Length: 99
Image (cartoon, rainbow, N blue to C red; front, side, top):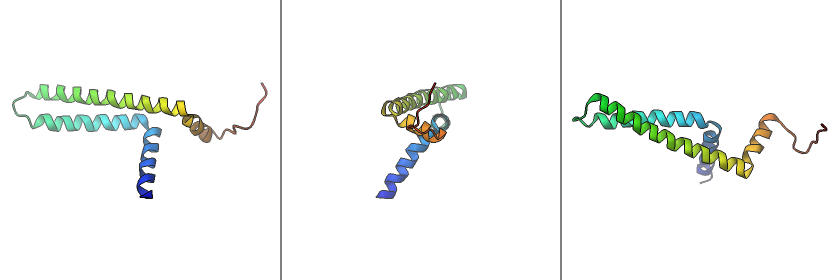
């Protein structure tokens, strides 16, 4: 049970660190799935199938971008983003600098 929790946490951390890559992969899978679905409908023109696939993928991308914005807002609100940046830049929070 502990391994499942750590894999979920590591997946969440990867998604938080690679938001745009995640949105791009979601867009690609959305357009591929929509094309596959539309191709199973024989009474539509090819151009209409492609347009529908693009619209479905665009809606999915907007939802993913909204989700990424919520995650970013949550990270800034809880201070996790500042801790992550401090670790990345190796900033000592207890050290004071004079101007």
